Image (cartoon, rainbow, N blue to C red; front, side, top):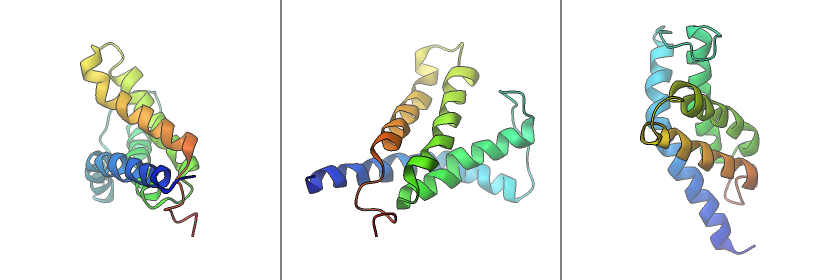
Length: 123
């Protein structure tokens, strides 16, 4: 494979994980401070919903960013964005669910392609 392919995968990971962390890090800090207030979009309770969101929006993207078990850790983010797009914003117009869909498709692409050679797993 050409090196531009692997640079493209790296840029995909850096761009989308970096942007996802702007949503996940504030939630992570709230959990660290003991704040588990959150919605319950799939009926598992606010605490588990918030923990799931933190995993999907902070923990998994951090690991994907460095290229550790990328395909595996893309799954929680895909699930989180699926819930956001199709449940939380399910009845909303496309403009309201567009960001969740963009993240969903980006992390699906990451899951299908893997991290590439510029990753922890390739070292």
